[in-house]
Amino acid sequence: MNSGWLPRARCLCLYLCQGLLLLCLLLPGVSGCGGGAADRGGDGEILLPIAGERTWRIPSADRFLPAPRGLYSDERDDVYVLDDAGRVLVYDRTGLLQRQWKMPDSRIGNPEGIWKLRDGRVAVADTHYHRVVIFHPDGEVDFTFGSEGREPGQFVFPVAVLEDAAGNLYVGEYGDHQRVQKFDGSGRYLLQFGKHGAGPGEFQRPSGLALRGGEVFVVDAFNDRIQVFSEAGEFRRILKLSDEFEALAYPYDLRVTADGRVYVIENRAARLTVMTLEGRLLGRYGSPGRNSHQFYQPWDLTVLTDGRILVADTGNHRLVELTP
Image (cartoon, rainbow, N blue to C red; front, side, top):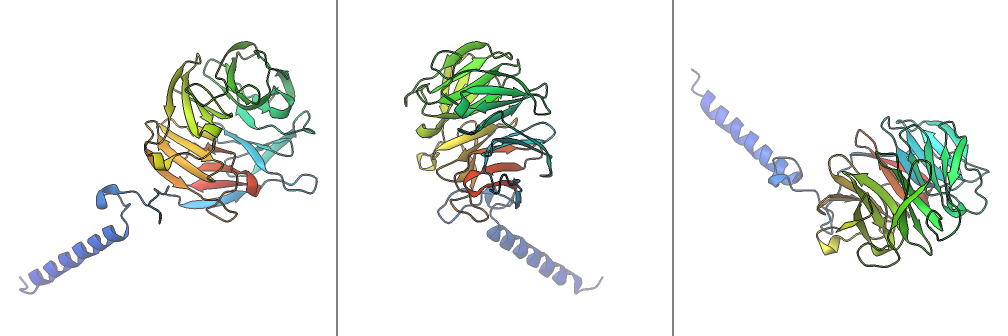
């Protein structure tokens, strides 16, 4: 045996160990190094790891560039977008525009909430026309329900809509009434919950809805929180970040995924926040501005089946795709 082999092998092992130690020091977020600690920004904030960012094109309308207001993605990752030109835009998973159609009317204001129903029709909360519009997949109107008013089944400004597993529709509205109403699939009123206020079960602009495990999650925007209810409208709990210094700042919409992650878009803070169902912060991305890694008054978001996140960066008139 070569007598010089053993010292050289020891040196090689030493160099490898030193290299691994240096890698752990430089990359504390790498699994197995530093206990798997999360990446943090200069202010100590936990950063959401994003590998890529790109912009989806919004087609112009009458010589101006519209802004996206509402988003929904289905199981095929077709993306439905509401813009402030009163249009529904449908994209495929790559960001290619497939088709579009106009709202019945948008002269006095534009809709905010959109949801694709299980049978392929599309529900839109037609905010300034005090109604919900149900479209066929080709964009033809099937029917509408609701009218201006404060009685059960009427709306002031409906801004959010979703469908549950039984085909019932939940509609969030603000204005004189801060509430969520529940309807059957034909638009027949069933129940309502919530009122104006800052206490449990009360709202100041319930602007976003999500459903998971028989519970309804409601973004309570002006109260900077998320509230959770049963499908019968019974108050369950307030979902908030466990650290008071990590509080939400004007959350505007949310998505709750099957793995128990809660994705929240914050309008005032201009950022995306991801947390657990228990309120533990997993990471944040974005800051106010008009460049990459920034948002300006974002209104909505959706999460695709492969984990990509799409943000309606409303103030910047763009859709931003984030790849974790």
